[in-house]
Amino acid sequence: MNSLAILAAGRKSRIGAMIGLLAMITLSLSGCLYPEDEKQNVPPKEAVRNVQAAIDQYFDEQGLLPIVTSSQDVPVYEKYKIDYKKLQAKGYLSYIPSAAFENGGNYYFIIIDEETDPTVKLMDIATFQKLIDVQSWVKQYSDSRGSLPKKDEMYPGFYTIDYEGMGKKAPDIRSVFSGVGLHAILDDKGNIYVDYGIDLMQYIQKNGESATNGIDDLRELLVKSSDFVPVKAPVYKLVGGEPVAVLP
Image (tube, rainbow, N blue to C red; front, top):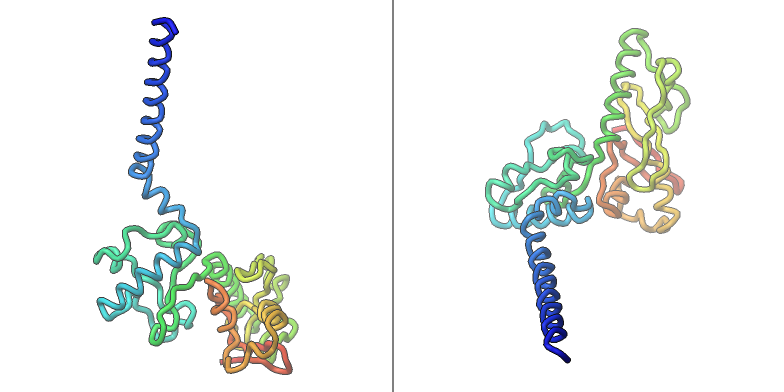
């Protein structure tokens, strides 16, 4: 090999080494420059695990739960929202998940079983807001007409809603458990709920009626089998092998 060829080969080798080194530096820097972006894009399921770990450690070391204070009449699956300021102030969590409402996300991260086994779950804000809207429509109708916009009885004391009579369109409520369309129902006091009967029936058909043994409130089946809670759901009992909403 002549001297020019040797020089060219050496130069090519050095360039290759430099490219490899630059690639390694780039990969290393990417981990330093963008950790917050990566954290903010954590999927809800992984975010639940991360927040659960922070909650567990906080509770073990502080003896308390980092929750936002709420009144006694708040429903169980809406009651204990997580207080991220408490977690961040003591270094248990460095960032608020992007899935959390407090960071522009679609869910409230809440704690259930607070006294026995504090567990992090997700409450779907879209469903919650739609039910708030329907509740407002029903109140306006009731205040102006002196009656409730109820139609067919779905369960004892629960009815479908007369949206046409209110001059409204039924909201598109999608189950976080199955993706199927759900309906809002109301009771004789004008309280609005989401009917999760179809989700519960699917669960029972899949797992067998024995899966309900020892379960007093069937909503627990949905909660224990997913990361979500049933928003604005009535209590359900098993009656004749089927889930039936019952009045409080």
